[in-house]
Amino acid sequence: MKWIEKTSDKLSQAFKSKRILKPFYALFEAADSFLLTPKTLTSNGSHIRDHVDMKRIMITVMIALLPPTLFGIWNIGYQHFAAVGIYANFWHTVWYGIARWFPIILTVYVSGLVLEIIFAQRRGHSVAEGFFVTGMILPLIVPPEIPLWILSIATIFATLFAKEVYGGTGYNFLNPALVARAFIFFAYPGVISGDGVWIAGKPDAFSGATPLANIAGSAASSLPGTSDMFVGIIPGCIGETSKIAIILGALLLIYTRVASFRTMISVIVDGLVTGSIFNLIGSTALMQVPAWEHLLMGGFLFGAVFMATDPVTSPHTGTGQIIYGLLVGALAIFIRVVNRGYPEGMMLAILLMNVFSSLIDHLAIQRNIKKRLARSSRARACACVRAKPGRC
Amino acid sequence: MMQLKKYLGPLNRNNPITIQILGVCSALAGTAQLKPAVVMCISVAVVCAFSNFVISLLRNTIPPRVRIIVQLLIVATFVILVDQVLQAFFYEISKMLSVFVGLIITNCIIMGRLEAFALANRPLPSAIDGLANGIGYGLVLIIIATVRELLGSGTLWNYRIIPETFYQNGYINNGLMVLPPMALIIIGVIVWIQRSANKELQEEY
Image (cartoon, rainbow over all chains, first blue to last red; front, side, top):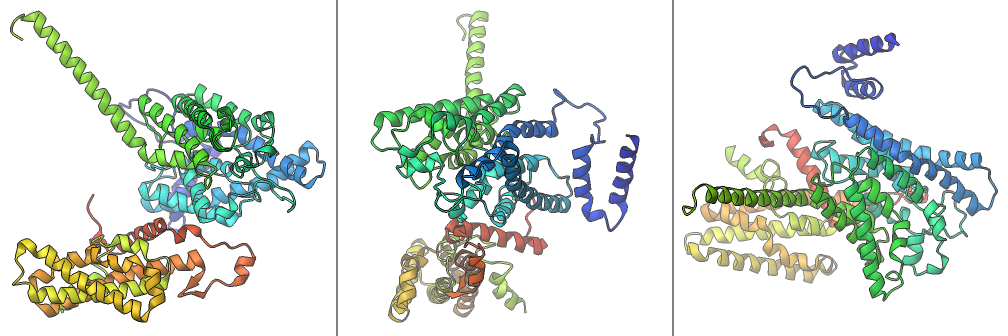
């Protein structure tokens, strides 16, 4: 295996020095550090507490995203064959799903990475790992029938205006994958809502609305069973349908502490609380949807596990994460139930709270500083009283 | 030569929208279509030039403490005149622009030029300055409106530009272009391009 390393070294020299290859150094560097361990070492006085770096965090998230992805691929095929009315065995189903899913993820990666490489080259830094996760998440939150040119425009828009103009990975205050989805939602609403887009290769006569759209359109009678919604055998965005797969991913993220369990739990708990409050009011069909069923519909759980916990765009303090989670959960259900125009409240709720997350952090830190100041001045006063009674 | 350069400043180096960041509100509101945007920038240029001229004539007689009210009165007079002309001769466009013609009074560019230039300069240079600022504002407006109408509606000046075959093959107009937030992003892109082209416009940070 020595020769791989040697070739990489030689190539690195070539990319650094040769005039023709120079513009592609960022591309080479990205591929090199993706495949091999980077050679740059800290020589003195580093403050390492853990050997988890950005690369490992991103890889963990990608592994956690595998269950929803794999289930999503199968479900694309399953929904297609169920709608067409042809019996297909497991491998046919998976094959059809891959044939649909692969162009989507390829489009996202190519359009996003080309832009990232251009920016990395012009600004003289290396391509950051952040886009690998964004590019893996984005195909999971779009319908399988999404036109690829729209997806490409949305990816470029989100990478450019939600990330690169603010300085690249780690400086973005909005989740790029959600910005891409919101862009599609507002610019091309026809391809991401309604009942024609959720099943790949759907025949015209077949209604393919998601459970959420059914309820928003007051067709509550045609809801699939709870177990179907839990397992995920329903039409929807590619990765959001299976709650089992999402919970598997969530367990890995919580176990490795890559994502904050505080955010996840508070989003879900407050989603339930808000749903129950609406149940008590219960004046429209949407308000009567049982609170726990909200968790099974649409992208609520996927958003809570993979989107709301994005370490860059969510608060860093523990208190902040809880407050942020509570607000996301409440807003998501609120938008869903009150505003019929936006059946998927989760996306808008997370984006809105992303904007507020640094403010929440600031308040949490200020509160802590005040508390500790009060405690220390109290302690000082006590010590003073003990030392010189009568003089303080 | 120096004089000329100073007067042409608003067209690029000292553009009211992209450098002074004034009048952004109307640049977001009135630019979904090209036609109203052009009418809007002609109106602003006219109002700006004439009110600059008149204020400059009165500059030595206006008491400083009430100058804002005097300025507002004069600007309002010209805005009403422009509004009436539009209603009389271009009724359709006037209806499209609706309240935004009246809101020219609140356009920061006009008040900014009155305060910064007309109160300290002779009438003719003031009128030229007002006109140049109006045109600089208009240039940016026309760029924004062209992008927004072309991508948002597929038309320019209400003529179809993007052919029918595109739509039949799955092309869809970008609905976000019709909404004001996209205009803000386009302004951002214009500022970005302008500053990367002109080194001296980049701030230290």
